[in-house]
Length: 213
Image (cartoon, rainbow, N blue to C red; front, side, top):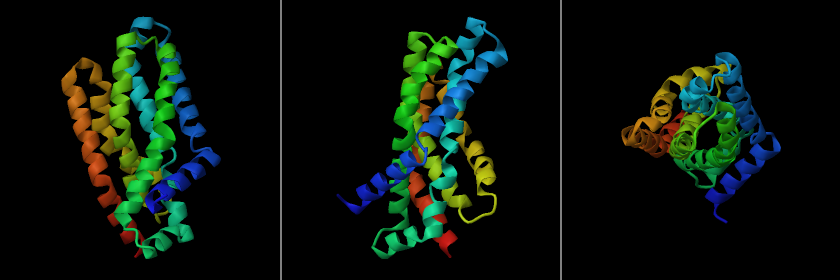
């Protein structure tokens, strides 16, 4: 197994053993459950807001584990050791991005089936939402790693993470929630997600290098 794959497997094991898998999914479902209580049981209203509700909950669920993505390894010196072994900062950031996506996205797609029942989604709407989440969640994972690297070493990193990540996640949220309106939104969502995935290793890597001094 390569060092890159080993780093992904290590981060996944740490996420699963520390509740990094169950907590975001539980938070996602809890957030979705709140929408019917907030807007009432009217099926037409719930169906109309369902895609937006799912995307809002998915964004918040992706934000939840951000604080543990970079900071623990930076404080314990693991990242320094990886750099000494020849891994570049962008490579480390890319591995963490893949591990973050694998840690929450597949389970999130499965949990969306339960969310669809709670929100009264129609079959076509559910299919479009699942496609949009499959396209957009890599962008959310990339944005999460960028945010984690930018706030690493700062006091109150958990609170700052939300302030940093949420504004930049708006395009994903807008295009993802609008995916049911036509192919144009899906294409814009894919372009935004691809841009984030392509740029995240370099932006996060630079931030990590600066944080280490």
